[in-house]
Length: 461
Image (cartoon, rainbow, N blue to C red):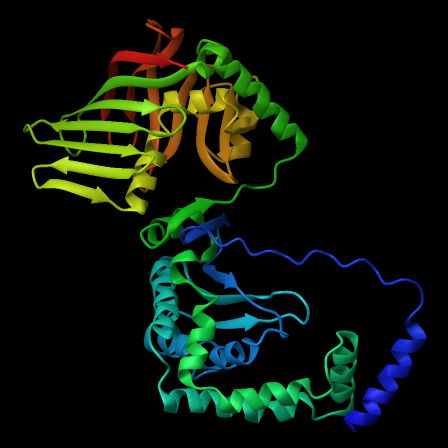
């Protein structure tokens, strides 16, 4: 019986209680992002993408635990749960899918949802999972649906105590964590009495669909294009040994020296230029750019060949876009995208590297052969490969010539991968900023688009 198990457990724990108790470890902290974002882990060659969503959770001591327990059975556990019905049965996107609150005994757990799906369907599956979370928080679960989940939960309880060893294990846990012997009975009592509104309110206090942490593991080239339209996507860095870090630091130092020196670039507060593009799919384009190297403000006035003009502005307070249709206030995602694209121009990469905002990783090789093998690419020349990283996201990949001058810069812009082959760098004497080396012309390899930069101006800090 449970009483005999508890008595045996008390004797056992008393016999083991030797010495002072270990100091309490600080509880883990779930840092919810300001907005939902997805971290991508590249696994080339795998046929299926694994998706995870996470949000803050609670411990079993929390008064909301019974509500999260019942919610898990309604939304994410079992063949008749909402996640399973939508993603597997209706859409046919996954064999295994679900969501659950994992509550620990003494520290906060987490809510997480999971799904494994084919690579090309990752975006569709992610949308469906988020929509089911949103639906379960926007409205009460209908009574019949909640009662069915409640019945499944209560009926499954017998299988947790259908053997003496299970009863003993439960009693040991309760004794170990200082919980009453009837803890589980109290939880089930509360589950029987919960209303749909109580369940929703408890979960809504923990889960905010606009502040989720998402992770996707799969082949980057296949899954990133379908995931980026759903959530802002960042790429997790691969583990790099000390040799790789050291090689990257040396390559970065050579690049900055070739471009005028780290001190000169650190002194630049803002750069203005005119960028002209031709031969691309959108025809001729002239853009007047003004970018502060520390982030904001940002201004881009684009004029197309037909005379249409669009001006985008970003400052600390947000962003606006002005065109033929009038003024438009940009949402947070559009502002972040503009800032991200501006921060990946070749000259901004140099400024950020000089300021210490980017980590440098790479491979050095006299002929470039070793670097080509390490990165799995045909480099078409250059001695060093330099990768620049920020917050575990790869910002750019740069191929350098023997002097350290960038030949090719690869980066993400507007959700697409851009490979820019720079034809010329020119040393310029800029008023208020001294002499630095700036790009003059380049070609986008995928589209054949030519790019030129002129009319440079700089502001010194």
